[in-house]
Image 1: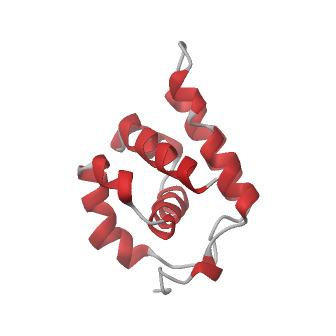
Image 2 (image 1 turned 120 degrees about the vertical axis):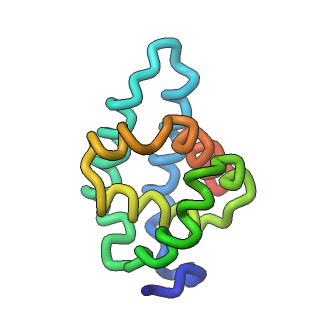
Length: 117
């Protein structure tokens, strides 16, 4: 497991900003959750978003707390947000994500990411 608190493990600021900008999708009248997931996956995979980091242990222990209570993301450090996103898209197909993670989780993550722009 990597040290989740090391700032040098974070992705580039431009990538964080791009992902944060998808918060606007939730405010769109014709919100399409599947399309949002496709956009996020594309940015995360194409940008090699923390793909060299192994945060599976963090995701198993702490990530599930955030998954079961998305309000925790409101005060989450940037490293937690990035670890959650990278592990989610590294380990799951889009269908699995859509089926198992409510859109409210991504809304909370993207809202918090906007604080780091």
